[in-house]
Amino acid sequence: MRRMTFLLHRWIGIAIALLMAVWAVSGVVMMYVSFPETTSSERLAGLPDLEMGECCSSGYLEALEDGAVEGPSVEMLVDRPVLRWSGPDGPQVIDLTTGETPVIDASHAGRIASSHYREATGAAAGLAVETIDRDQWTVYGRFRQHRPLYKASFGDEAGTVLYVSGLTGEVVQDTTAHERFWNWLGAVPHWLYFTAFREIQWLWYDFVVYTSVLGTFLTVTGIYIGLRQYGRGKTRSPYRGAALWHHWTGLAFGIFTLTWVVSGLFSMQPWGWFESEGPEAEHMALAERPATSQDVAALVRALTAQPAGDTVRAELTVQGGAPFAILADAHSGLGRASLPSLAPSPPGESELARRAQLARPADPIAGMSMITRGDAYHYAHKQDVILPAWRVIYSDEEQTRLYFDPRTAEAIRKVDAEARAYRWLHYGLHRLDFPGLRTRPVWDIVTLPLMLGVSLLCLTGCWMGWRRLTRTKKRRKTAGA
Image 1 (cartoon, helix red, strand yellow):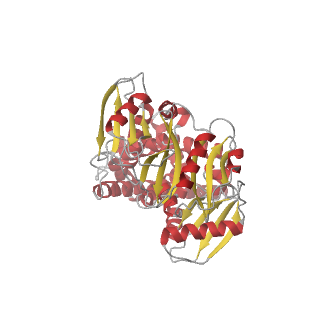
Image 2 (cartoon, one colour; image 1 turned 45 degrees about the horizontal axis):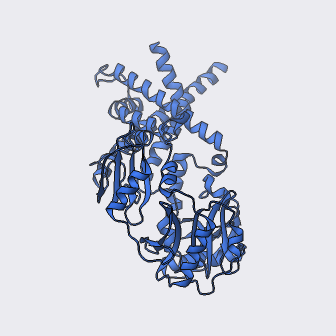
Image 3 (tube, helix red, strand yellow; image 1 turned 135 degrees about the vertical axis):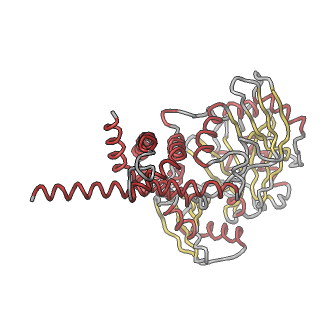
């Protein structure tokens, strides 16, 4: 059995050591450069102020199907106010001036991209627009519904590229030359996000899961071998050269390598592990009823009748059966307004407490309060979060938590048992994302040496595997001669 363990470690290492090394080295890059993503705040920054002067045709009401309307909002599409919502067939958009669906072609996409760039940067730059189905930065499944995509490349110093949806005209992705360069060394190899491979969802998913399982087994056997061989020889190791380095780095970084590769496996939520139910039930309870075309009409009439000020986006929400408008400016400032007056209607703590009970009426509340700093489940680490937030902890079996935006009274995060497990077993172990440790530069000082140690462990394993293969090849040639 000992010999079998040695042989399995050797040959599994030969098979996947290079992949493990790629994961480790690219993980170092990902500490500092994330995969490109157009955030909500970036979208808002690229929107012009709402101008409803020539609005509105009643034709948009005909486009809304009878019954519920999901996520309706009003914003500008260059110089025209449009209504956006989600229907059975995906995202929808209607020009409120004409009541017709705007046609998004390359020329229109260029104007949209130029408007977004000008609003976001205050500058103008030349651009070239091309039609694409997908590329390296639009491989996520969520981009499929927006195809064709229009890739608008700007001639600015940053090398900005915006991707405009051929379906709705939204800017759905943005990248810069800096992001593209470093992601070829970071997220792309780390996640195996090569376009053609990532498009075959099942194959990509299974490959990542099962190579992670093999990586876990490789690390466990390596720790066993490293401990068993420790103390032999004059240097406390029977090995020399690269093998000696591999032995010592394995002893020093083996446990961290194990937790790192296992938590990487957990990121894929294999076999349904850590899949949260999500907040849909709470959202439905908080709304009490879905939004309707009559609510949408009330929002459009209110925006037409009154100046929108610096509002760039107005979203309809239903809370406790009553419609409200959530008004956003270009700096991500949010506020709730009543309909039809559009008078500011900020929620107080008493209302937030009522909504907490409404969200889960069967569960008693263990505690609730306004938090101004992040806690273990709602915090900023390489991402933005809404703070202050109204935190509610329930006394149900899973100790469910809900977080509300105190500006709008909307539920923004749910943490149940599965989400809690995922947070600690993936984010905690994979990123060393623990309270007290995630503060920079403490996080960098601790994490970077560990990642470099894992990288050295994997790279020495690659070298040993290559030497083994070439030595075997030479022996076969010699035997053949």
